[in-house]
Amino acid sequence: MSSSDFRQIAVRTDSGKAERLFRAAVSAFCSLTRPSRREIGQLEDLTLPLFDAVSVESRRYVAAALSECEYAPAALVRRLCEEPVDIAAPLLIRSRAVSDIDLIALIGRHGLPHARAIARRKDLNPTIAHLVRALEKPHLARAPDSNMNATAVETTAPMSTQTTFNVSETQHEPGAGAENARRRLRSMMRAECEATSTTTFVAADAFVKLRETALTGNAAFFQTALADALDIDFSVAQSLTANRNYASLLAALRALDLSEDRAFLITAAIYPGQFPHPQAIRAFLDRYRLLHREAAKDKVRLWKAETLSRAIRSAKPANGVTHAASNSDDPMASSGLRVSSRK
Image 1: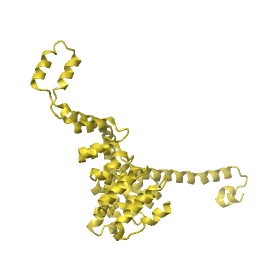
Image 2 (image 1 turned 60 degrees about the vertical axis):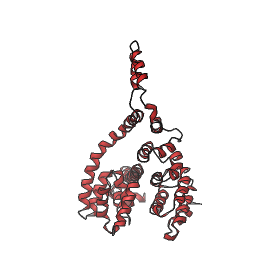
Image 3 (image 1 turned 120 degrees about the vertical axis):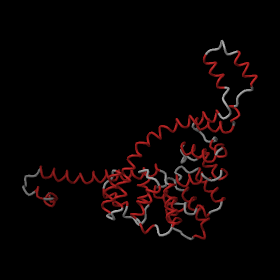
Image 4 (image 1 turned 180 degrees about the horizontal axis):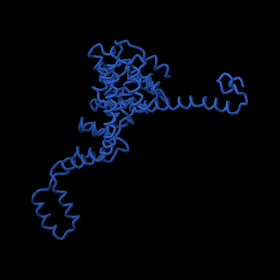
């Protein structure tokens, strides 16, 4: 199927065919060689609201299909990974859309069944593999019996310090292997926590400015604050709130790493008509929760590139005018673009 076929499927809204639509949309998406960000977003917008309405078989089918897809939508993949392992297994084993941090979180929430599937991934992070082994065989860390301990103590006197250390390791209580794995995981994630700690203060300051300007009711004030927070051009920030839906604003707030309640407060102030009932609020929270921050930051990078591109385009004519005026003997050449263009 072509990308145009996928777009045609995506616009259908017959709720009686949710099951077929869910499968067909994913099948059409998987047939795309290199889907655009817009098509990835279309698939998420279409399938996530249908997720709770489709059967287990459909979820299992979609998980298997997306596990082989190089550009699988991250939000839909993460939602499927939260399912029981008989549905999530293909994604846990093969999907590139699941990061090491995602895998650790999944093991923490779902335990051994998900861990066993994750252990079958190729090139699995050794720390995660060690965690899985510790969960599967905690008895390996069990302390030896008392007779063996007594013998070991008697024979340790002439031993080296290293040997004594090894003996003491064998006397750990049950669960020591899992605890060692947890320590390794904490050290593995420490770098990421430190990287995000600085941005927390920046996000808090940005939220205050965005909240205050959004509540003024003056769109220009809010757009200026948004442009400052994202470091983009004012015209780009203006376009983000000019749409009928809040999808672009959602990505902007997610890139700033705002919490769900803060993001909703700002969005409701800018798009009050989008939340007439509790179901609309729930849909917003689901979309925001499933929107991966890296995907949102990718969109911000595109907006910044657009800002840079506009700056370059606007600089070229100005340089051209200066050049034409400086190389012309006609005193009227510096009076305007029209004179320069006639030459």
